[in-house]
Length: 92
Image (tube, rainbow, N blue to C red):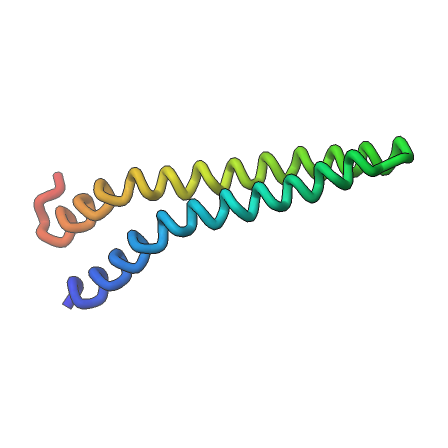
C-alpha cells in the first residue's frame, strides 16, 4: 500500500528536478538582466540604490532556490533509501 502511494510521488519529484533547475536558471537570468537594465537606466541616486538592492536580493534569492533544488536532487536517492529502510524496519 505504501509503495502504491509513495512511488508515483517520488517519480514525479525526480522527473521535475532537472527541468526545474533549468527553469529557475533561465527565469533568474532574465529577471536579473531586467533589473540590471533598470539599474543602468536609473538617473537618481535613490533609484540606483533601490535597483541595486532589488538586484542583490534577486541574485541571493535565485541562488538560494537553485542550491536547494540541487541539494534535493543530490539527496533524493539517500532519502528514498532511508524511507525504504524505515518501511522495512531495518533502521536502527
